[in-house]
Amino acid sequence: LNCISNLQKVFERLNVLESVHIHYCRGLNTSFTQQIINLTKPFKLKSLFICDIPHVESLELLLHKSGDYLENFGYILEVNYELSLIQQLFELITKYCKNIKFLDFHYGCGRQMNYQLLNLIENIKQNINYLSIDVSNDYIGTNEYGSIILQNLGQILPSKLEYICLNIYHIKTSDFEVFLKNIQDTFIKKLLFENFQSQVDILPFIKEYIMKKKRIKYLAIKESSLVKDLISLKGEVDEFKLYNIKVQSYYDLKINLYNYIKTIN
Image 1 (cartoon, helix red, strand yellow):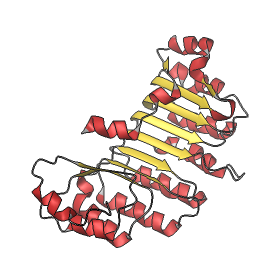
Image 2 (cartoon, helix red, strand yellow):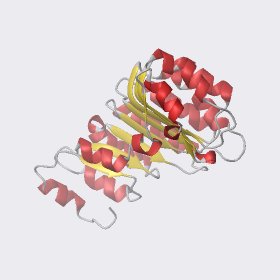
Image 3 (tube, one colour):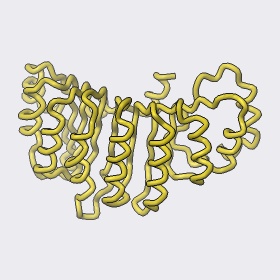
Image 4 (cartoon, one colour):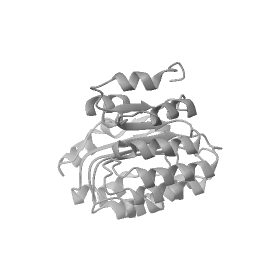
């Protein structure tokens, strides 16, 4: 994006552009946003996935102009990212973006970040249909980030979701059980887990709270430390099939954002 100095002129000349998708681009700076803000026609920003937080004031002007169009939002943020900026970002999304359907988060910024994320989800959950949360970089030994998510996420989810994917560095049995109890009455078409430091067998809990409820259609579980995928366990796959739950490969079921954006265009 930094290479386009006359971006405003380019967009002004496009008469058939139905939507715009920004996919994890580091060029979302003040110069870019100012050109968009100056457009005389609507800027139909449908997807915004970022890997840093641009100038907050410019971002607010951009979301004020295009927030009603935004349906897909996500970020990848580093461990030491400034929490005040993240809080401002979430406040802007909550204020201007009422039609979010897809949320994608990769982060490791501390416990307060988790609560800000949960608050954002609760505030805009009316349209959420796809949710992906990755706290797999919680590798410093506390395992706290995943615990906060598992203990609190289930109770704020909408009653129906197309897709939820959780990548957690270490899943504690007690936290996982709380999460499953809270979602056992939620219909989730595609449910995915990736556990990076598996020390317990999570399958019995899934069978107790999820399988017998028949509230999901597709399931994928990957244990990275053991390089094991549920799809490789034929007996388990057959058992889930008895409850009309189709076990699939984790990577087959996991949404590729680039491909997803192409399908919604």
